[in-house]
Length: 305
Image 1 (cartoon, helix red, strand yellow):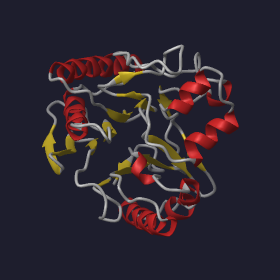
Image 2 (image 1 turned 30 degrees about the vertical axis):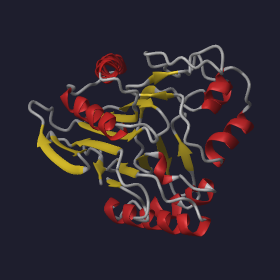
Image 3 (image 1 turned 60 degrees about the vertical axis):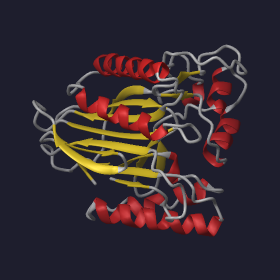
């Protein structure tokens, strides 16, 4: 895993991203005041893992603090093995932090990608915002999450088709989001132009997603396949004029099951810096990436870097 202030070193002055990794021995790594911090989680079940990527809202004050508070809150949660448990705990954490920031007169939030990985059952996904999870093999890149952005709100209302949605979400670059952990949501509003932010998070699922996005629910089981590498990242990884030109390079960069993930991540981020220069994109965004893959050994558990 890596969290960069800027891929080229010429961007923001503050890293508003964060991450959390709790390994199978209960050893946690995360950022506190932009510095990597480590601690041990008492009573953590052997072999259970938790991964998270958080992106503090750019353009808002205290985006870094929102991501830090959310990461710290995640460390306090028990290891979880079913979706109902995850939803209950994270909704409660969201409400608690919402009230804490509102009481302080602050309107801010962060994205949240959480992957809970029990030792011998499918991973559990929880998603809020526009950070993403991708699955990559030797030939394909598949995005496994739906961005909580204005284009998705329009699609929920039947005002965008699949081609228009893909163009606005995966081809164009935008920094607007319609839902954030701690801040709340406008996704469920029946009027696209409604300005009120609902305190409650709005879960996307097969009952409210348009047909072309079915199967990409925000909260679901996710089987990690040994032939794929899984990438969790904040939007700094594709904040480019032509993001797909870079994303199409990922199979060549990452589909190498015998190579250490740390080496693959080094090459991915080096390619990102090159893409920023070649596309003359603004290198002003934080970038946080976690790579994970399932070992081919039946008894093994995922190994991150």
